[in-house]
Length: 365
Ligand code: AMP
Image 1 (cartoon, helix red, strand yellow):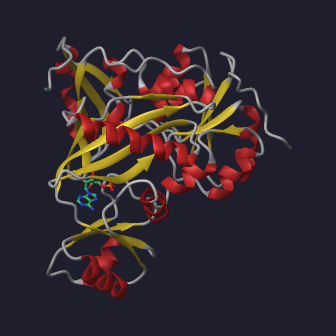
Image 2: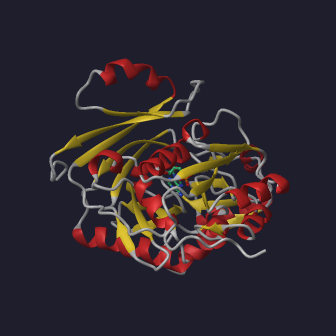
């Protein structure tokens, strides 16, 4: 059966199917509601943050072909707030609905080796090697040097599945700790700072690009975003150009976040990409005319992209784990724009909400 094609543009009142039920889906559904759309969440967990604010939910594993077929028939477009969906599932969805971003964006983003190979044709990354055993790890570490970082090729996020390969490394132990069949060994980058760029790309190839931001991590998890990043003009332009070229190369429709390292030598290296809204874009909810979530909805529905010019500088701070217990104080702080994700259980390292603070333009300079 040919996919439905109601997306020129998708009429308000139509249903956006979202694969994944986390906070990114929740904030997308809230933005979609503002524009008159309904959202239908597909997620394996009951009580997901996204389902709580959506019109419909399918609770099923991502590989449940019957549930996917019914879901694909029920919605007008399918998108993703989580890219680690099996290939066969995405394939099946494309038979029933328009899928944005396309399969290629997801395939590239869900495997760090495929991702780094793809990016290297466009922009530099840190040197890396594919490794499939402790012996290959040792050989690769000898080649690219230490320290290095061993990561799982697939299913890694927020530093999960990452092991630092120190000069006195026990390779067998490091391999066992990483815990996957295929890994990627990356040369350790001497960071000056980390930045990201979020671009929206519409079905016709039109652009809207938020300014580069600086991201500060604690324990490999994003802690604070400073918007905009204070960068030399040329470096900011380079970062934006790289993000555009990657999105064009993927023929992506939707949002693309590109995470980059600024090295101590002033070089820009791409770390990873995410073809969806991104934690480093949460500041846009209060500091830009169009938030990243509304922009995402606009792009996947084929609507004109919105204005991305910030009206304020901003600082976004994640509320991770028990930090969310400070919510009452934040509610009574007039300068704190609080966003909570409705997660019932507080766990260490779990993103529970975030706070945006606004400053006059030029504040960070
Ligand atoms: P990732 O899951 O690849 O985004 O990694 C999480 C964080 O770990 C990054 O934001 C960096 O702070 C750090 N990191 C990852 N890869 C490297 C690397 N090759 N060199 C130095 N730091 C890294």
